[in-house]
Image (cartoon, rainbow, N blue to C red):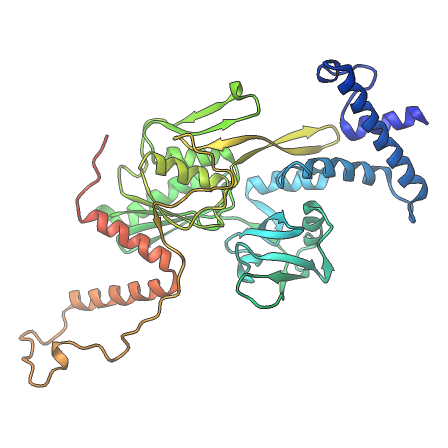
Amino acid sequence: MKTSRLAVLALATGMTFGLASPSLAQSSTSSAETYRLLNLFGDVFEQVKAKYVEEVDDKQLIEAAINGMLTSLDPHSSYLNMDNFEEMQVDTRGEFGGLGIEVTMEDGFVKVISPIYDTPAEKAGLQPGDFITHIDGTAIRGLTLNDAVEMMRGKVNTDIVLTIIRKGEQAPFDVTLTRAVIKIQSVRAEAKEDIGYIRITKFNEQTFSGLQRAIGDMRDQIGPEIKGLVIDLRNNPGGLLDQAISVSDAFLDKGEIVSTRPRDTQNTERYNARSGDLAEGLPVVVLINDGSASASEIVAGALQDHRRAIIMGTRSFGKGSVQTILPMPGNVALRLTTARYYTPSGKSIQEVGIVPDIIVPQARVESIEGDTRRSEASLNGALRNEDAHTTDAEKDANSRRDQAEQLAIDDYQLSRALDMIRGISLFGPRPQG
Protein backbone atom coordinates (compact mmCIF):
# COMPACT_ATOMS: atom_id res chain seq x y z
CA MET A 1 0.00 0.00 0.00
CA LYS A 2 2.92 2.29 0.71
CA THR A 3 4.23 1.95 -2.85
CA SER A 4 0.78 2.75 -4.22
CA ARG A 5 0.60 5.85 -2.04
CA LEU A 6 3.96 7.15 -3.27
CA ALA A 7 2.88 6.58 -6.85
CA VAL A 8 -0.20 8.70 -6.19
CA LEU A 9 1.95 11.39 -4.61
CA ALA A 10 4.28 11.38 -7.58
CA LEU A 11 1.33 11.94 -9.91
CA ALA A 12 -0.17 14.64 -7.71
CA THR A 13 2.99 16.61 -7.01
CA GLY A 14 5.24 15.93 -9.98
CA MET A 15 8.04 14.77 -7.62
CA THR A 16 10.29 11.75 -8.12
CA PHE A 17 10.64 9.69 -5.00
CA GLY A 18 13.93 8.01 -4.16
CA LEU A 19 15.92 10.84 -5.81
CA ALA A 20 15.62 13.91 -3.60
CA SER A 21 15.51 17.21 -5.44
CA PRO A 22 18.24 19.78 -4.65
CA SER A 23 15.79 21.89 -2.62
CA LEU A 24 14.82 18.92 -0.43
CA ALA A 25 18.44 17.92 0.06
CA GLN A 26 19.34 21.31 1.56
CA SER A 27 17.95 20.46 4.97
CA SER A 28 17.17 17.11 6.54
CA THR A 29 14.57 18.79 8.75
CA SER A 30 12.86 20.40 5.75
CA SER A 31 13.04 17.11 3.86
CA ALA A 32 11.47 15.15 6.71
CA GLU A 33 8.63 17.67 7.07
CA THR A 34 7.95 17.66 3.34
CA TYR A 35 7.72 13.86 3.24
CA ARG A 36 5.52 13.86 6.33
CA LEU A 37 3.06 16.21 4.63
CA LEU A 38 3.15 14.21 1.41
CA ASN A 39 2.41 11.05 3.39
CA LEU A 40 -0.48 12.91 4.99
CA PHE A 41 -1.80 13.64 1.51
CA GLY A 42 -1.53 9.94 0.71
CA ASP A 43 -3.44 9.03 3.87
CA VAL A 44 -6.22 11.49 2.98
CA PHE A 45 -6.37 10.13 -0.55
CA GLU A 46 -6.78 6.57 0.77
CA GLN A 47 -9.48 7.58 3.24
CA VAL A 48 -11.47 9.37 0.54
CA LYS A 49 -11.12 6.42 -1.81
CA ALA A 50 -12.23 3.95 0.85
CA LYS A 51 -14.92 5.82 2.79
CA TYR A 52 -16.47 8.62 0.72
CA VAL A 53 -20.22 8.13 0.38
CA GLU A 54 -19.92 7.63 -3.38
CA GLU A 55 -17.23 5.97 -5.45
CA VAL A 56 -14.76 8.53 -6.77
CA ASP A 57 -12.39 8.43 -9.72
CA ASP A 58 -8.63 8.53 -9.10
CA LYS A 59 -8.06 10.98 -11.96
CA GLN A 60 -10.78 13.31 -10.70
CA LEU A 61 -9.32 13.34 -7.18
CA ILE A 62 -5.73 13.92 -8.30
CA GLU A 63 -6.65 16.69 -10.77
CA ALA A 64 -8.72 18.37 -8.06
CA ALA A 65 -5.74 18.18 -5.70
CA ILE A 66 -3.43 19.71 -8.30
CA ASN A 67 -5.88 22.47 -9.09
CA GLY A 68 -6.42 23.15 -5.40
CA MET A 69 -2.69 23.57 -4.90
CA LEU A 70 -2.47 26.06 -7.76
CA THR A 71 -5.61 28.09 -7.04
CA SER A 72 -4.50 28.52 -3.43
CA LEU A 73 -1.53 30.54 -4.69
CA ASP A 74 -3.39 33.35 -6.47
CA PRO A 75 -6.58 33.89 -8.53
CA HIS A 76 -4.81 33.38 -11.87
CA SER A 77 -2.85 30.13 -11.41
CA SER A 78 -4.76 26.99 -12.32
CA TYR A 79 -4.64 23.50 -13.76
CA LEU A 80 -5.72 23.06 -17.38
CA ASN A 81 -7.04 19.61 -18.18
CA MET A 82 -7.11 18.42 -21.77
CA ASP A 83 -10.32 20.28 -22.66
CA ASN A 84 -9.29 23.49 -20.87
CA PHE A 85 -5.87 23.44 -22.52
CA GLU A 86 -7.36 23.05 -26.00
CA GLU A 87 -9.86 25.86 -25.34
CA MET A 88 -7.08 28.14 -24.12
CA GLN A 89 -5.14 27.54 -27.33
CA VAL A 90 -8.23 28.31 -29.41
CA ASP A 91 -8.88 31.45 -27.32
CA THR A 92 -5.49 32.96 -28.10
CA ARG A 93 -6.11 32.33 -31.81
CA GLY A 94 -9.25 34.47 -31.54
CA GLU A 95 -12.13 31.97 -31.65
CA PHE A 96 -13.72 29.92 -28.91
CA GLY A 97 -17.03 28.70 -27.60
CA GLY A 98 -18.86 30.09 -24.58
CA LEU A 99 -20.38 33.29 -23.21
CA GLY A 100 -17.62 35.77 -24.01
CA ILE A 101 -16.83 36.79 -20.45
CA GLU A 102 -13.53 37.23 -18.59
CA VAL A 103 -13.81 36.34 -14.90
CA THR A 104 -11.85 35.90 -11.70
CA MET A 105 -12.70 34.58 -8.23
CA GLU A 106 -13.26 36.98 -5.32
CA ASP A 107 -14.84 36.37 -1.91
CA GLY A 108 -16.11 32.98 -3.03
CA PHE A 109 -17.99 34.36 -6.03
CA VAL A 110 -17.11 34.71 -9.69
CA LYS A 111 -16.35 38.35 -10.47
CA VAL A 112 -16.70 39.73 -13.98
CA ILE A 113 -13.52 41.43 -15.22
CA SER A 114 -15.16 42.36 -18.48
CA PRO A 115 -17.61 41.11 -21.10
CA ILE A 116 -16.04 40.78 -24.54
CA TYR A 117 -17.45 43.00 -27.25
CA ASP A 118 -20.27 41.57 -29.40
CA THR A 119 -20.67 38.35 -27.38
CA PRO A 120 -23.64 36.93 -25.42
CA ALA A 121 -22.23 38.40 -22.19
CA GLU A 122 -21.92 41.89 -23.67
CA LYS A 123 -25.33 41.73 -25.34
CA ALA A 124 -26.95 40.60 -22.07
CA GLY A 125 -25.60 43.71 -20.33
CA LEU A 126 -23.08 42.13 -17.95
CA GLN A 127 -20.73 44.75 -16.52
CA PRO A 128 -17.23 44.82 -15.00
CA GLY A 129 -17.53 44.30 -11.26
CA ASP A 130 -20.66 42.16 -11.44
CA PHE A 131 -20.61 39.13 -9.14
CA ILE A 132 -22.07 35.82 -10.32
CA THR A 133 -23.52 33.96 -7.33
CA HIS A 134 -25.50 31.15 -9.01
CA ILE A 135 -25.36 29.30 -12.31
CA ASP A 136 -28.67 27.77 -13.36
CA GLY A 137 -29.75 28.05 -9.74
CA THR A 138 -26.68 26.29 -8.34
CA ALA A 139 -24.68 28.31 -5.78
CA ILE A 140 -21.08 29.05 -6.74
CA ARG A 141 -19.72 29.53 -3.22
CA GLY A 142 -17.46 26.60 -2.41
CA LEU A 143 -16.54 25.91 -6.03
CA THR A 144 -13.19 26.67 -7.65
CA LEU A 145 -12.98 29.15 -10.51
CA ASN A 146 -12.38 26.30 -12.95
CA ASP A 147 -15.47 24.48 -11.65
CA ALA A 148 -17.59 27.59 -12.18
CA VAL A 149 -16.17 28.21 -15.65
CA GLU A 150 -16.82 24.57 -16.57
CA MET A 151 -20.47 25.00 -15.50
CA MET A 152 -20.79 28.01 -17.79
CA ARG A 153 -19.53 26.02 -20.77
CA GLY A 154 -21.90 23.95 -22.85
CA LYS A 155 -23.30 23.29 -26.27
CA VAL A 156 -23.77 26.19 -28.64
CA ASN A 157 -27.32 27.62 -28.71
CA THR A 158 -28.17 26.35 -25.21
CA ASP A 159 -29.36 28.78 -22.54
CA ILE A 160 -27.80 29.46 -19.16
CA VAL A 161 -29.13 31.56 -16.28
CA LEU A 162 -26.65 33.59 -14.21
CA THR A 163 -27.65 35.22 -10.92
CA ILE A 164 -25.95 38.60 -10.61
CA ILE A 165 -25.16 40.94 -7.73
CA ARG A 166 -24.41 44.45 -8.99
CA LYS A 167 -23.34 47.52 -7.10
CA GLY A 168 -26.24 49.94 -6.91
CA GLU A 169 -28.88 47.22 -7.27
CA GLN A 170 -30.87 46.38 -4.14
CA ALA A 171 -31.31 42.68 -4.88
CA PRO A 172 -29.72 39.94 -7.00
CA PHE A 173 -31.25 39.42 -10.44
CA ASP A 174 -31.14 36.72 -13.11
CA VAL A 175 -29.73 37.11 -16.62
CA THR A 176 -30.37 34.52 -19.34
CA LEU A 177 -27.64 34.08 -21.95
CA THR A 178 -27.41 31.79 -24.97
CA ARG A 179 -24.07 30.07 -25.47
CA ALA A 180 -22.41 30.75 -28.83
CA VAL A 181 -19.25 30.25 -30.81
CA ILE A 182 -17.31 33.39 -29.99
CA LYS A 183 -15.34 34.87 -32.85
CA ILE A 184 -13.43 37.84 -31.58
CA GLN A 185 -12.62 40.68 -33.91
CA SER A 186 -10.06 42.11 -31.57
CA VAL A 187 -9.70 45.46 -33.39
CA ARG A 188 -12.37 47.61 -35.01
CA ALA A 189 -12.11 51.17 -36.27
CA GLU A 190 -14.46 54.02 -37.04
CA ALA A 191 -13.90 57.56 -38.23
CA LYS A 192 -15.29 60.10 -35.79
CA GLU A 193 -15.29 63.00 -38.25
CA ASP A 194 -11.60 64.05 -38.27
CA ILE A 195 -10.42 61.63 -35.55
CA GLY A 196 -9.71 57.92 -35.84
CA TYR A 197 -11.41 55.80 -33.18
CA ILE A 198 -9.84 52.35 -32.67
CA ARG A 199 -11.35 49.84 -30.24
CA ILE A 200 -9.17 46.93 -29.07
CA THR A 201 -11.31 44.33 -27.30
CA LYS A 202 -8.65 41.68 -26.57
CA PHE A 203 -5.00 40.92 -27.23
CA ASN A 204 -4.92 37.78 -29.37
CA GLU A 205 -2.79 36.72 -32.32
CA GLN A 206 -4.63 39.06 -34.70
CA THR A 207 -4.41 42.24 -32.62
CA PHE A 208 -1.28 43.94 -33.96
CA SER A 209 -2.06 43.19 -37.59
CA GLY A 210 -5.59 44.46 -36.95
CA LEU A 211 -4.18 47.68 -35.47
CA GLN A 212 -1.98 48.22 -38.52
CA ARG A 213 -4.98 47.87 -40.82
CA ALA A 214 -7.11 50.11 -38.62
CA ILE A 215 -4.60 52.98 -38.64
CA GLY A 216 -4.27 52.67 -42.42
CA ASP A 217 -8.05 52.64 -42.84
CA MET A 218 -8.45 55.75 -40.68
CA ARG A 219 -5.84 57.63 -42.72
CA ASP A 220 -7.55 56.61 -45.96
CA GLN A 221 -11.05 57.53 -44.76
CA ILE A 222 -10.21 60.83 -43.09
CA GLY A 223 -7.27 61.89 -45.24
CA PRO A 224 -4.70 64.56 -44.37
CA GLU A 225 -7.23 66.31 -42.09
CA ILE A 226 -6.90 63.58 -39.47
CA LYS A 227 -6.27 65.20 -36.09
CA GLY A 228 -5.39 62.18 -33.95
CA LEU A 229 -6.35 58.75 -32.65
CA VAL A 230 -8.41 57.50 -29.73
CA ILE A 231 -7.38 53.99 -28.64
CA ASP A 232 -10.19 52.45 -26.59
CA LEU A 233 -9.00 49.77 -24.15
CA ARG A 234 -12.03 49.91 -21.88
CA ASN A 235 -13.23 46.48 -20.73
CA ASN A 236 -10.27 44.86 -22.49
CA PRO A 237 -9.21 41.98 -20.18
CA GLY A 238 -5.78 41.50 -21.75
CA GLY A 239 -4.32 38.49 -23.51
CA LEU A 240 -0.96 37.83 -25.14
CA LEU A 241 2.09 39.68 -23.85
CA ASP A 242 3.81 39.83 -27.24
CA GLN A 243 0.75 41.54 -28.75
CA ALA A 244 0.69 44.15 -25.96
CA ILE A 245 4.36 44.84 -26.65
CA SER A 246 3.74 45.15 -30.41
CA VAL A 247 0.78 47.51 -29.90
CA SER A 248 2.87 49.71 -27.57
CA ASP A 249 5.78 49.61 -30.03
CA ALA A 250 3.44 50.81 -32.79
CA PHE A 251 3.40 54.27 -31.18
CA LEU A 252 6.92 54.43 -29.73
CA ASP A 253 10.26 55.11 -31.42
CA LYS A 254 12.48 53.98 -28.58
CA GLY A 255 12.66 53.13 -24.89
CA GLU A 256 11.47 50.35 -22.62
CA ILE A 257 7.91 49.11 -23.00
CA VAL A 258 7.62 46.73 -20.04
CA SER A 259 9.76 44.54 -17.82
CA THR A 260 8.84 41.21 -16.25
CA ARG A 261 10.50 40.28 -12.97
CA PRO A 262 10.35 36.70 -11.65
CA ARG A 263 11.24 35.55 -8.14
CA ASP A 264 14.91 35.57 -9.14
CA THR A 265 15.29 39.18 -10.23
CA GLN A 266 18.51 38.32 -12.08
CA ASN A 267 16.23 36.82 -14.73
CA THR A 268 14.35 40.09 -15.29
CA GLU A 269 13.37 40.55 -18.94
CA ARG A 270 13.06 43.95 -20.57
CA TYR A 271 11.22 44.65 -23.81
CA ASN A 272 12.18 47.74 -25.80
CA ALA A 273 10.57 49.65 -28.65
CA ARG A 274 12.00 49.68 -32.13
CA SER A 275 12.22 52.74 -34.37
CA GLY A 276 9.00 53.71 -36.14
CA ASP A 277 5.69 55.27 -35.09
CA LEU A 278 2.69 54.03 -37.10
CA ALA A 279 0.73 57.11 -36.03
CA GLU A 280 3.52 59.38 -37.29
CA GLY A 281 3.32 61.68 -34.29
CA LEU A 282 -0.45 62.17 -34.28
CA PRO A 283 -1.89 62.95 -30.83
CA VAL A 284 -3.16 59.82 -29.10
CA VAL A 285 -5.66 59.44 -26.26
CA VAL A 286 -6.03 56.02 -24.59
CA LEU A 287 -9.29 55.23 -22.78
CA ILE A 288 -9.20 52.78 -19.84
CA ASN A 289 -11.54 51.74 -17.02
CA ASP A 290 -11.75 49.14 -14.27
CA GLY A 291 -12.30 46.45 -16.91
CA SER A 292 -8.92 47.17 -18.53
CA ALA A 293 -6.50 44.52 -17.29
CA SER A 294 -3.11 42.93 -17.86
CA ALA A 295 -2.02 43.54 -21.47
CA SER A 296 -4.24 46.64 -21.63
CA GLU A 297 -2.41 48.03 -18.61
CA ILE A 298 0.95 47.31 -20.21
CA VAL A 299 0.01 49.43 -23.25
CA ALA A 300 -1.48 52.25 -21.15
CA GLY A 301 1.49 52.26 -18.77
CA ALA A 302 4.09 52.32 -21.54
CA LEU A 303 2.43 55.15 -23.49
CA GLN A 304 1.81 57.08 -20.27
CA ASP A 305 5.37 56.80 -18.98
CA HIS A 306 6.82 57.88 -22.34
CA ARG A 307 4.26 60.71 -22.57
CA ARG A 308 3.24 59.43 -25.98
CA ALA A 309 -0.46 59.37 -25.12
CA ILE A 310 -2.87 60.96 -22.69
CA ILE A 311 -4.57 58.31 -20.57
CA MET A 312 -8.21 59.10 -19.78
CA GLY A 313 -11.03 57.31 -17.99
CA THR A 314 -10.88 55.56 -14.62
CA ARG A 315 -8.27 53.48 -12.78
CA SER A 316 -7.57 50.12 -14.44
CA PHE A 317 -8.11 46.66 -12.94
CA GLY A 318 -4.61 46.14 -11.51
CA LYS A 319 -3.59 42.71 -12.82
CA GLY A 320 0.17 43.05 -12.88
CA SER A 321 1.19 39.40 -12.89
CA VAL A 322 2.55 37.18 -15.66
CA GLN A 323 1.03 33.74 -16.25
CA THR A 324 3.14 31.17 -18.06
CA ILE A 325 1.52 28.14 -19.69
CA LEU A 326 3.60 25.09 -18.78
CA PRO A 327 2.61 22.06 -20.92
CA MET A 328 2.66 18.75 -19.04
CA PRO A 329 2.52 15.12 -20.20
CA GLY A 330 -0.92 14.01 -21.38
CA ASN A 331 -1.82 17.22 -23.26
CA VAL A 332 -2.56 19.09 -20.03
CA ALA A 333 -0.88 22.21 -18.68
CA LEU A 334 -0.35 24.49 -15.72
CA ARG A 335 -1.18 28.18 -15.85
CA LEU A 336 1.33 29.45 -13.31
CA THR A 337 2.06 32.98 -12.16
CA THR A 338 5.78 33.36 -12.77
CA ALA A 339 6.55 37.10 -12.72
CA ARG A 340 5.20 40.63 -12.25
CA TYR A 341 4.82 43.41 -14.82
CA TYR A 342 6.54 46.78 -14.34
CA THR A 343 6.01 49.91 -16.41
CA PRO A 344 9.03 51.71 -17.97
CA SER A 345 9.29 53.97 -14.90
CA GLY A 346 9.58 50.90 -12.67
CA LYS A 347 6.05 50.98 -11.21
CA SER A 348 4.30 47.71 -10.47
CA ILE A 349 0.82 47.40 -11.97
CA GLN A 350 -0.28 44.78 -9.43
CA GLU A 351 -3.34 45.87 -7.39
CA VAL A 352 -2.85 49.60 -8.02
CA GLY A 353 -3.45 49.52 -11.79
CA ILE A 354 -2.89 52.49 -14.08
CA VAL A 355 -4.16 55.85 -12.85
CA PRO A 356 -5.31 58.00 -15.81
CA ASP A 357 -3.70 61.37 -16.45
CA ILE A 358 -7.23 62.78 -16.58
CA ILE A 359 -9.94 61.10 -14.51
CA VAL A 360 -13.19 60.91 -16.47
CA PRO A 361 -15.87 58.73 -14.85
CA GLN A 362 -18.49 57.34 -17.15
CA ALA A 363 -21.51 59.60 -16.65
CA ARG A 364 -25.04 60.04 -17.87
CA VAL A 365 -25.37 63.48 -19.42
CA GLU A 366 -28.76 65.17 -19.66
CA SER A 367 -29.46 68.44 -21.34
CA ILE A 368 -30.88 71.15 -19.08
CA GLU A 369 -31.46 73.64 -21.91
CA GLY A 370 -34.51 72.16 -23.56
CA ASP A 371 -36.46 74.79 -25.51
CA THR A 372 -35.88 77.57 -22.94
CA ARG A 373 -32.45 78.67 -24.17
CA ARG A 374 -32.16 82.46 -24.18
CA SER A 375 -30.40 84.34 -26.94
CA GLU A 376 -30.49 87.66 -28.78
CA ALA A 377 -32.99 86.19 -31.23
CA SER A 378 -35.51 85.66 -28.41
CA LEU A 379 -35.68 89.37 -27.55
CA ASN A 380 -38.56 91.50 -28.84
CA GLY A 381 -37.48 93.85 -31.59
CA ALA A 382 -34.05 92.25 -32.06
CA LEU A 383 -32.37 93.03 -35.38
CA ARG A 384 -32.54 90.22 -37.89
CA ASN A 385 -29.42 88.66 -39.37
CA GLU A 386 -28.67 90.04 -42.83
CA ASP A 387 -27.92 86.54 -44.12
CA ALA A 388 -31.17 84.92 -43.03
CA HIS A 389 -30.81 81.65 -44.95
CA THR A 390 -28.80 78.73 -43.55
CA THR A 391 -25.76 77.78 -45.65
CA ASP A 392 -24.63 74.21 -46.32
CA ALA A 393 -21.63 74.82 -44.08
CA GLU A 394 -23.91 75.92 -41.24
CA LYS A 395 -26.15 72.89 -41.75
CA ASP A 396 -23.08 70.67 -41.58
CA ALA A 397 -21.91 72.43 -38.42
CA ASN A 398 -25.34 72.00 -36.84
CA SER A 399 -25.33 68.31 -37.73
CA ARG A 400 -21.89 67.83 -36.17
CA ARG A 401 -23.05 69.68 -33.05
CA ASP A 402 -26.08 67.42 -32.72
CA GLN A 403 -23.93 64.31 -33.17
CA ALA A 404 -21.47 65.54 -30.53
CA GLU A 405 -24.29 66.21 -28.07
CA GLN A 406 -25.71 62.74 -28.65
CA LEU A 407 -22.28 61.13 -28.19
CA ALA A 408 -21.88 62.97 -24.89
CA ILE A 409 -25.13 61.33 -23.79
CA ASP A 410 -24.28 57.86 -25.14
CA ASP A 411 -20.56 57.68 -24.23
CA TYR A 412 -19.35 60.57 -22.11
CA GLN A 413 -15.77 59.27 -21.80
CA LEU A 414 -15.32 58.92 -25.56
CA SER A 415 -16.82 62.35 -26.09
CA ARG A 416 -14.24 63.88 -23.74
CA ALA A 417 -11.41 61.98 -25.48
CA LEU A 418 -12.44 63.39 -28.85
CA ASP A 419 -12.61 66.88 -27.33
CA MET A 420 -9.08 66.39 -25.97
CA ILE A 421 -7.70 65.47 -29.41
CA ARG A 422 -9.36 68.49 -31.00
CA GLY A 423 -8.03 70.74 -28.25
CA ILE A 424 -4.48 69.48 -28.79
CA SER A 425 -4.80 69.99 -32.56
CA LEU A 426 -5.52 73.70 -32.02
CA PHE A 427 -1.92 74.18 -30.94
CA GLY A 428 -0.39 72.68 -34.06
CA PRO A 429 1.46 69.41 -34.76
CA ARG A 430 3.07 67.42 -31.99
CA PRO A 431 6.83 68.09 -31.69
CA GLN A 432 8.99 65.17 -32.85
CA GLY A 433 12.00 63.75 -31.07
